[in-house]
Length: 196
Image 1: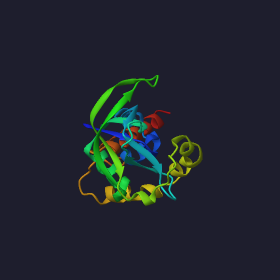
Image 2: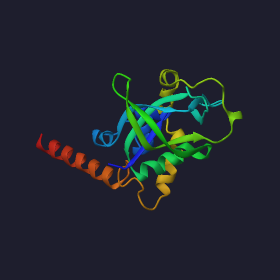
Image 3: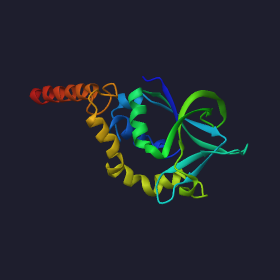
Image 4: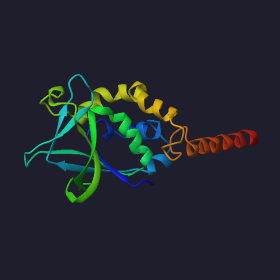
């Protein structure tokens, strides 16, 4: 399990997108899914916006005392996960450390968590709409395109392929842990087939 915690407020709130970036698959096996803990959280003094001509949002600091963004707090992220997330977010965002309010299963405040990383928009206010980005609309109308194709993940995939050392600590689909698990499954399958 990794030492990083991050607050996500857009497409990465969908576990399928998060796992695709971190583990190389929209539907990783239960071992990979168990490595990350996902909880609802709120980041105060920020506002989420639609990005012009894009499916994903941006978040910027906001001076209003009532401004906040609801998202997810993900714990258990590794250095390799953060490396992949940095590539996925690109140069329109900057990773910053923030403090979030964690919510319980009823949506009530359950405590603050400091030292959480998040991605803040730095590409300019002119690229943003005034309207807030809606996660439910993304899931209902656009996520199918994100899950059905790998084009949006090409930068991450290419960087992982080009990397000499495995920055995921072997957790990626083509990492040493992933390959070992796959070989183990294949070996069990062969044993079962030979027994029949």
